Length: 92
Image (cartoon, rainbow, N blue to C red; front, side, top):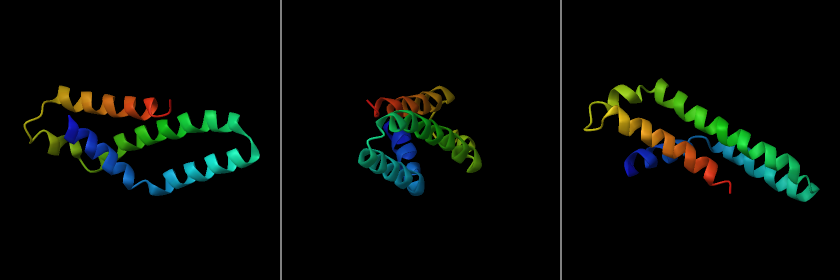
C-alpha cells in the first residue's frame, strides 16, 4: 500500500503547474482578504488532481502493469481510495 501511495504522490510532481497556480491563488487571496474564494477553490483543485491521477493511470496502462505484480485488484482500488482520502484530509 505504501508503494501505491508513493506512486500517486510522485505522479503529482508532474502536475507542478497546477500546484503552482494553487499557491498563487492562495497567496493572492490572502493578500486581498478573499478567504471565501480559497475555501471553494482548494476542494475543486484537489478533486481535479484526484481525477487527473485516474486519467494518468489509464493513459499509461497502469492497471495492466500493476496486475503483473503480486497485487490484486482490491489492493489497487484501496490504494486509490486512500490517496483521494489523503488529498481531502490534507485540507483540514
